[in-house]
Amino acid sequence: MSRPAVEVADILRAQGNRFLDRYEKGFDFQQLKAFRAIQRCRTAALGGHIDACPRCGYQAAISYNSCRNRHCPKCQAQARDHWVAARERDLLSTDYFHVVFTVPHELNVLALDNQRLFYDLLFNASAQTMLEVAADPKHLGAEIGLISILHTWGQNLLLHPHVHCVIPAGGLSPDHDRWVRPRYPFFLPVKILSRVFRGKFCAGLKRLYRRQKLRCAGPAATLADARQFRQLLRRLHRQDWVVYAKPAFGGPVQVLRYLGRYTHRVAISNHRLLAFDGEHVTFRWKDYAHGSKQRKMTLLGTEFLRRFFLHVLPKGFVRIRHFGYLANSRRAATLPLCRRLSAISTSEAPTPPSAGEGPTTWHCPRCGAAMVVADRLTAAEASRCGYFDSS
Image (cartoon, rainbow, N blue to C red; front, side, top):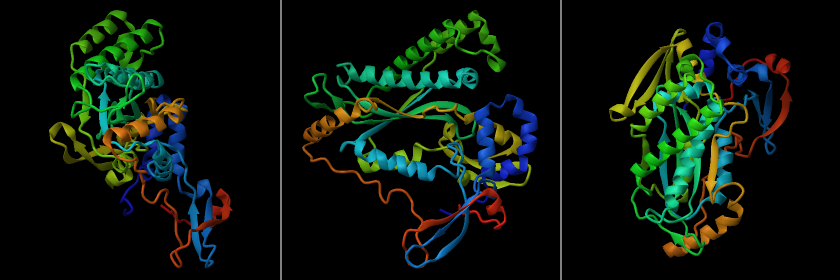
């Protein structure tokens, strides 16, 4: 992939001080930490290293170190490759479904000041909805497993919390004696999922509010009034909540490619950025409300950064979670059984999935051997060596 014309880090270096002058009072520590990390990523400020070929002795120019912040657009490829490679052993030789749960935009004001509580509730309400509806004999009558991935942004970078669920096609019968295959082309009925999800999420919000755990300040200040909060929930109960499902999209190889696209995304990739003139940022976005048309949007640099940093997650918050028989505490015991029963139900032997070449390794341009780190440099040493960005 070619190097992008402009990067988020370029906008930070040009507009960062102006942005902080305006928004730093509303910044939390994690946002400020991400700001500093992205700003210094792959610059002399983080030090560097020199790679060499152990076979022919070729030595590369200095490469500046990555910040490794999970919100940095330049630092996710390696983390994604390692995560996807580790998931190979968890995949079943069956088709997979993709279901997306979205909360109404009226709740965004609560998400802003209650990130950890709000996103935990989104994970749990969506997962319990899937598990409960799947367990109902009227729909599937089986125990399922799923991987849930949190995204908090829309294509325009505004807040849009939603969870992507990846689910193997089928589940374990209640007696764990056979593999139950889905009877619907979209795995489970979307309207039923929507209603159950709405009920579980609203019940969870009521619980948090009653226990005085929800912070109602800023744009959500009116919801500190219990009557206003109840009115909001009544309005939301009258709405159809958006649950989107796709037909089965293939087996293990396809799901690995899918996971590679979704698991380690940040709010916007550098390759969606089209131009930056020092004041305005232009980027490409997909308008899902109008037939997924490709459009361009231009924002002031400070507004672009404000939207970008809306999506910095709390410290230690896990944005990829496993539920059902794929839960971390259970999958070592249940996956072999699922693999055996699902193979029997399709009359096929399990096929080991392949992620392709695995994590990227830099190879010597002369002889093709894998390069190794020959020397590490401090920030002071790297700054004396001149600028080279290895991205």
